[in-house]
Length: 187
View 1 (cartoon, rainbow, N blue to C red):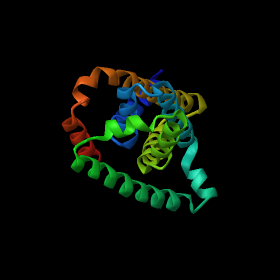
View 2 (view 1 turned 90 degrees about the vertical axis):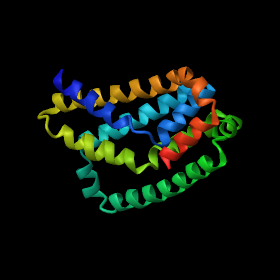
View 3 (view 1 turned 180 degrees about the vertical axis):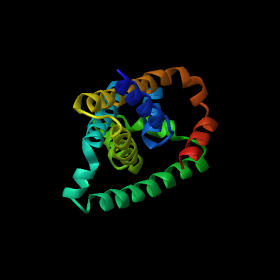
View 4 (view 1 turned 30 degrees about the horizontal axis):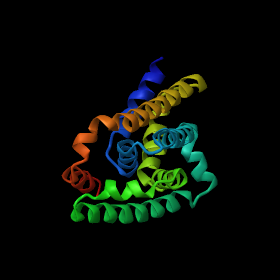
């Protein structure tokens, strides 16, 4: 039970940071647009990444030596572009929710969600680096599996709570000033 609780606490503490993925889930929740599928895509992606992190990113990077460099440069490019877009949105007055509402389709939303998830360097740092490193404190497959299960459960809990809980933030987040603040923090 201890490995699962540690996994849950570790995963939950890492996922709380405001970033592109969480802001996207929040926007989708506020618009009530494809919330279940967006939350599921985020949580399943985390489940894969957490499993890989606990299983050992060191082994993967040993087999594919250029993988860390590729992820680092792709992630840096992603952060620069996304940060610039959020900064521009903050300067323009936070019309993000209206613009996003017109995007609409499930597939477009899922593609955006998966890009925000898989192109984000922080997800690799959190899942491979930090969660993978903490998992090494547990010996044996059962303890490591419990740790991974706890971290994965925290991801499902967080994304579904954020997506469906966004409705409660609706009155606050309908104000452009709130989006301006959120976009500035993300940028």
